[in-house]
Image 1 (cartoon, rainbow, N blue to C red):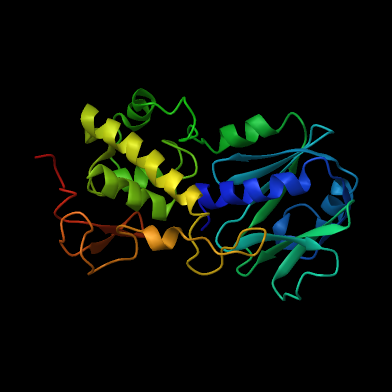
Image 2 (cartoon, rainbow, N blue to C red):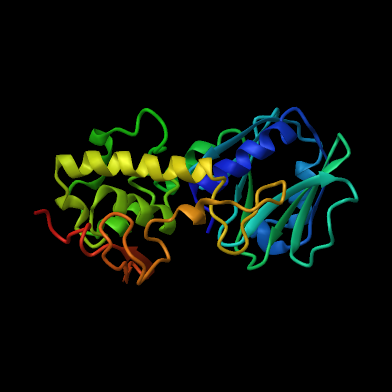
Length: 279
């Protein structure tokens, strides 16, 4: 699933393409994309909207319009967006929607597994939408402090890996970057979230930021489907320290990486560097 670095990469690539442009025409071929709303109705509502800002909140891409409305795009497992000149994009059986812009170019939405969503929100609905999903702070913003992270984890008995994945501690972290951040912080993924002391919280905050910043610098990770809007693969997979590396030596101590499951998700860690309990 695309996580914060992948969505931020998409945002950065799409911003100069979309901002200031008008949606001349919109075709939505998959009713699952906008359910329970009728895709034809959503497409009609989107046509004529002028983009003022391409934004992001956690794993959500936000296309803000001059009207005050916003289109929220969640890529889920296999969603991607591709930009090109009209008529130049290659045929694709997994194309679910196409936005034709007023400059003669198209933005096509592709989704193999069809889990992605498009939600068109009215001007007063965006804040409530995110509040209902209990999204935590943005981990790359100044407000993501050790104190804020400590408060969000305080008293929680869930494993720290699971606490990072549920989005309440920090928005946008998924399976890959949770594993990479915990390795950097030397924290075992099964540690109780509420058991972390002040030094561990400080290390974890720094590690989360470092892992996400590395992901953005490498344009995200391509394990299978992810591409940026120019059709390019990410390169973060070349930098993984533990994710997907079971049996390989830990880059820090040489101990073979192990795999377990936390909250139903495959989880990779170093049993030597990331001790179950401090000391």
